[in-house]
Length: 120
Image 1 (cartoon, rainbow, N blue to C red):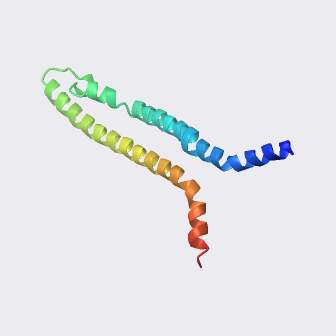
Image 2 (image 1 turned 180 degrees about the horizontal axis):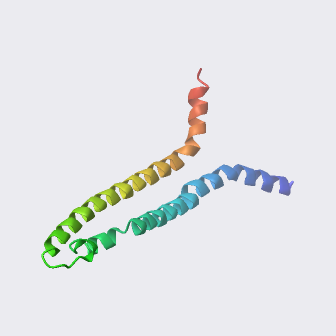
Image 3 (image 1 turned 30 degrees about the horizontal axis):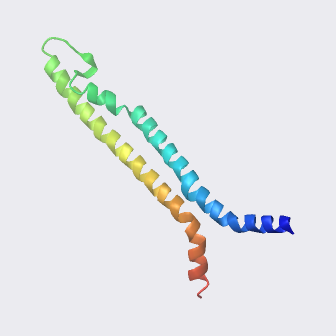
């Protein structure tokens, strides 16, 4: 009889354990993964290097009379690349936010489906 009570109390606690895992443990791990992924994307597109070398001549051309033009070309190319990189990083962040919000909403969808789907 005591084993049955322990088993039934465990079974009754399963939904709460699931919700704790879903909304606390798994959500924290997902956010850690997204943080690592965004860091990797930022490292791959090398925003830091672009900013450090923003005013350096394009392809390190230091020929006489060509330095000013090389700096201008370098600034133009790096500006275009910087905007493209920021678009990529922003799109990645937006995708991660959408995925995370879907993750948070997903356990509620069956309940909403039962409530509103059963009304027909």
